[in-house]
Length: 126
Image (cartoon, rainbow, N blue to C red; front, side):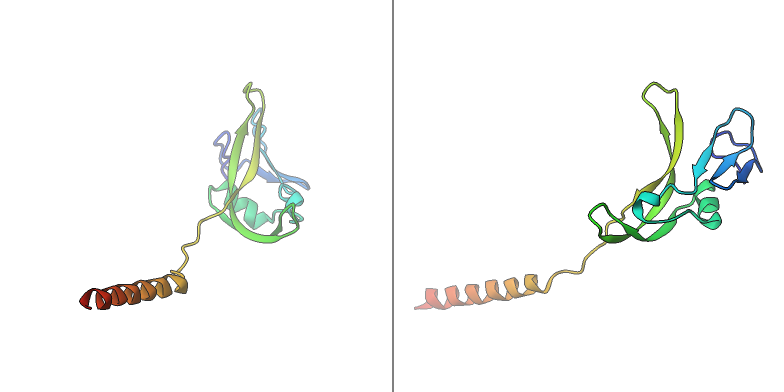
């Protein structure tokens, strides 16, 4: 696997608590428990491999601070401290907007507007 930080091929090693780069001085690490606060025990090897390769992954059954379950997608995100001294990698949550079908209430309003127009036309005729 190619490291997203230093670019070295075959340098990502699966360790007990992380997926880390073995290249000297690189410092890349994606912690397996990155999503623990959201109710996901650990990132699987498959999920981590996809994230490190630059792909988005499906995350299902996460839990918000309010205790509500939700699904979303995730991608690898590089975080750099303000003073540029620290670099950290994490999973960024992506919430894609969902297009909703038009509400039936809109059709009812249109019908009501047509009836109003008809009533107005009838009134104008007398």
